[in-house]
Amino acid sequence: MQAEPRKSLVGEEYEVEIGPVAHGGHCIARTSQGQVLFVRHALPGERVVARVTEGEEGARFLRADAVTVLEASKDRIDAPCPFAGPGRCGGCDWQHAKPGAQRRLKGEVVAEQLQRLAGLTPEEAGWDGTVMPAEGDKVPAGQVPSWRTRVQYAVTADGRAGLRRHRSHEVEPIDHCLIAAEGVSELGIEKRDWTGMDSVEAIAATGSQDRQVVLTPKPGARLPLVELDRPVSVLRIDERNGQVHRVHGRPFVRERADGRTYRVGNGGFWQVHPKAADTLVTAVMQGLLPRKGDMALDLYCGVGLFAGALADRVGEQGAVLGIESGKRAVEDARHNLAEFPRVRIEQGKVESVLPRTGITEVDLVVLDPPRAGAGRKTVAHLSSLGARRIAYVACDPAALARDLAYFRDGGYKVRTLRVFDLFPMTHHVECVAILEPATKGL
Image (cartoon, rainbow, N blue to C red; front, side, top):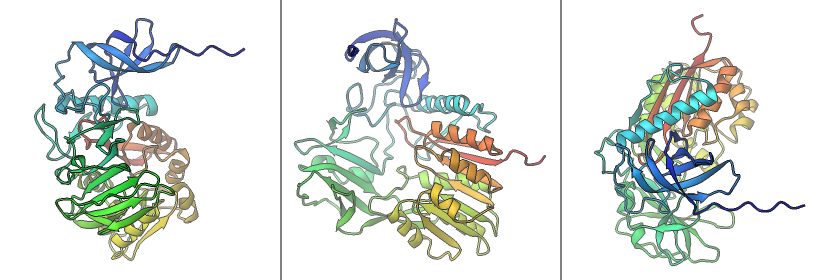
């Protein structure tokens, strides 16, 4: 006998007390029936009317927006962005919170994930509990740092540029993004007609004056003539196979970090905050303390940011192996690090390539995995190599905490943890954990 479908609760409203912050840009509350609500646009301690946006009767939890604030937190401010709020742009999570409160909330999330998934207190992780703002981001409440050097715009049916609404394919048309870096804003993407395009990505390099626009057309659509107020290269993503093709100008932008210039091709990955690359390199090198002659691994190495920093420091007697799955990123990394004969870059997935290298011991490891983390198998392999120190760069505290637990099983402990607010107004943070053998000094 087929079960009757559950009743949708979308649109239902509940007056609730807001509890602690949760990972993902929302806070936890409960309905009078005890059902869990993940509420956006709220702050801990507030009393709000929450309107359900996803969920049904009997579901483990519901998603909701705070549509009316009955009792406000002292940390609440009016959102500076006119496109923020319930049902609007989903790019920012904390426009309604003071900058200091945003960092405090992010710190609470990191601490909760460490405790729940790795059984670590901040003290055990060598972390003082603070989330450090990026250089230049110490702005008063009500102001927004313009930090995002890469912005992907969605396009409406009538050709207007906008941003996706939270957990939706619907587009919120905008005329300006407050967190977009000046170099992105000056391209004027929001002011043009993008009819026929599925998305438009704008890139403003921080190591040069390079600007790039990456177009993804809808099937069968013709590319528009891109005429902007300044020189810009244009790339196109083939909707059939995802390949990136040069339309006009250079197929890469030049970025700069740690005193070196890096080529980043075809819209490839680079940290989006202008200070992020230098901030992370500094944290990693201060944690690892490389020595001349060291053998080091740079896993998920991208275009070679950490491999280049390591190569500079381990010298001609040292060696660095980088592993990266992206073909174009590998080409860029080899180009960027061509002056170092003792640097080798291999293409492929880390879990497949690393065992084939035959490497049985190393001095140092850097890993900067994707959001899902490195995983148990890769962590076990790394733990067997006897590295003096390991630097783990993480964009997701949950994945970091899970992998730290695996490292503990492999005989490593966290020496220090640093947390950086490199994505103001959003729920994202960047963490740098330095690990060392648990038996060190015994």
